[in-house]
Image 1 (cartoon, rainbow, N blue to C red):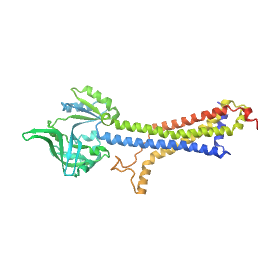
Image 2 (cartoon, rainbow, N blue to C red):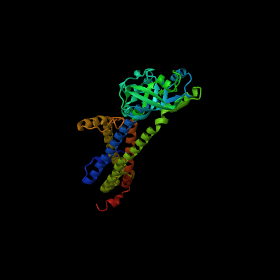
Image 3 (cartoon, rainbow, N blue to C red):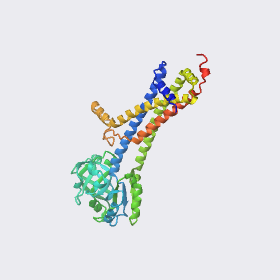
Image 4 (spheres, rainbow, N blue to C red):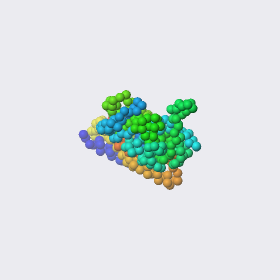
Length: 413
């Protein structure tokens, strides 16, 4: 390929113009592309950060998948050993669950009561890492201790050592009539993951839960299963169910919290498309810039045609000029966006300290800082899209330049 059109195009792109308006439009095109790329990278990185925090906190607390008995699992120890040996399974822990209404002297609130084995819970949950008071080891069989979410404890107005009454929907029939099932627990710990789970979850020893539901002391209702890759849970749980005898039910996290993450994914896609319009506007400025450059350079184009350049080579002159503008804007935006995405958390934290305020309150949001996670696949998508739009924007002005008639352009020169 003849390099002359490329050299001329690069010279036109770098040259100082007598027409300052054209120079301003060219600069605004570069600035618009850079701004659009930088904002896109930063915003999508922040959304990736929120997605990561939700995944780690919410999906760290709820089971990746669960095998339920009818109503209890038969020989669950053997079943747990078999499931834990399956490929992709990280850990297995026994579980009992009940919907209850908690009551104290200061409040009433409904929650999900979970019976767990404190020694095994760390294998399938992040709960032990988010204890704000007490310890899971304090959930000892027969003592009827309970661990509440920090927000739930605040609603009930209880502290460590206080009593909490659990009201179950299952009724007792006795000589005195029909009475609800009540049980008093002692608060031995609280946890905080910074999500709505802080107000809806409570934990007791699994043997205490079995007694509460009138099972045998060693019985369990379900096995909580943690996988190496949580996104494999919907497929692997059915493989596990096929190998387990009996009429057992299965569920996975996509049924309980899948809509939340689908909504985040959709929101990320829509915001990405909307912000991409910034780049599209900047690309439209490239069209305007090159159209004016073609009009300004009609005499030069005619001279180049008379010196032997073909219409295709003239077209390449202006394509190269537009590509140079797009490449420069995309490169600047890439550098600014990556820098911002990697440092936005520290910058916001510094601003909070400098201004003496907090942009994200832990009492309102599930986290108290602005997370960011740079995904290079997003960066690749943004850079490719921005550069492709700038290349497409050069085609019409370059085509107009190739159609300039040398005789008509030089008639009055």
